[in-house]
Amino acid sequence: MTAVIVIIVIVVALAIIAAAFFVIGRRDTTRAVGTLSDETKQRDRTGRSAELARRDADQATDVEVWTPPTPEQIGVSRRQFLNRGIWGMAGLGAIGFGAGLISYLWPRVSGGFGSKINLGKVADLKAKIQSANGFYYVPEGKLYVVDFPASALPKARQTYQPAELAAMEAGVTVLYQKCPHLGCRVPPCLTSQWFECPCHGSQYNQVGEHKAGPAPRGMDHFATAVSAGVLTADTGSIIQGAPIGVDTTGQEPAGPHCVSGGE
Image (cartoon, rainbow, N blue to C red; front, side, top):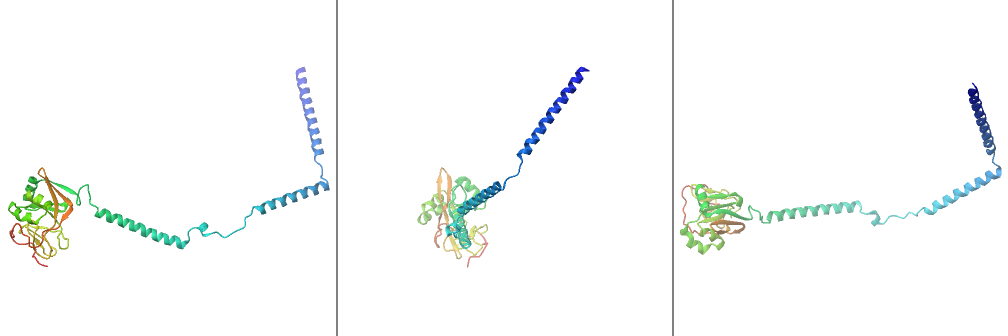
């Protein structure tokens, strides 16, 4: 019972002390909050005005005078942009066309037309010629390989170049498929055993020598070389065909023509 009374007394005492501190604080706050004098208010207004005037002056000194921009600052005008764009596109087009043209005309060295093509052993080529009825076609090189009779070699040596004779001495010759007239591909005629152009009727014997039609010469040849019995044709080196009138083989047509010689 005594302990309870003691606790109650302590709580009441603490509450009285807390109330006393609260009242004292309120009095101090009330005393601190007073009214300003007119002199103080006037001084405050004067200070604020001076501060605003100083800020305005600082801002005024920071403003730059506007001047019109120079052409260099403006950069490219619309007309200049269009002109340069047109010339740029024209330049790119010219570069692309030139690159394509060079790529088309540049000889290919990795195989195919325009490069040196290994046609294989001459003995194997002769067998292929026989199985192809006298005209062995190699699409990779756009060429024909045909037999060249040994009896024609004496006349051939007086007409053809060494690069052509290399294959002829081995018993074959290599002909470009393109007609010397206007560039058509000349197919063989199996009945006549001649080459006969279906475009304008030019005719050539089996070794490509001109026989009839508007072509200005015989069929063109490729430069050839024979090493260890292997024939190589350089399709990047075209040799013009023999002149009109050259006939080393004396071959007559073996049968009917596929086209008639003429214009």
